[in-house]
Image (cartoon, helix red, strand yellow):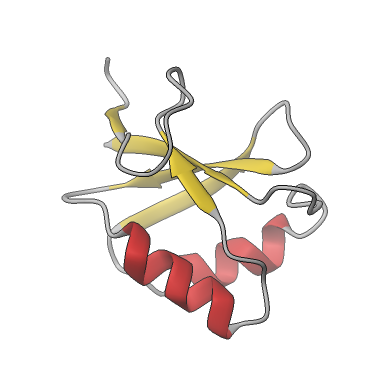
Length: 86
């Protein structure tokens, strides 16, 4: 299992987590989307290779602002997924 953070700058992702989660789990590699300490950031649990472009497209087509993806510790922009066991 791997994780990455999905951030929506200036958007309350916390309140919208159920809708965001229902959109993202249509991607069979995503297993869950959980809250973080930040209102604009959620934690995505997935298997296999990350697909931030596809995930962002799904969310944008559903009316959400375009998100940024990062590993949970480094805060780097896009391409920072990490193994959950790490």
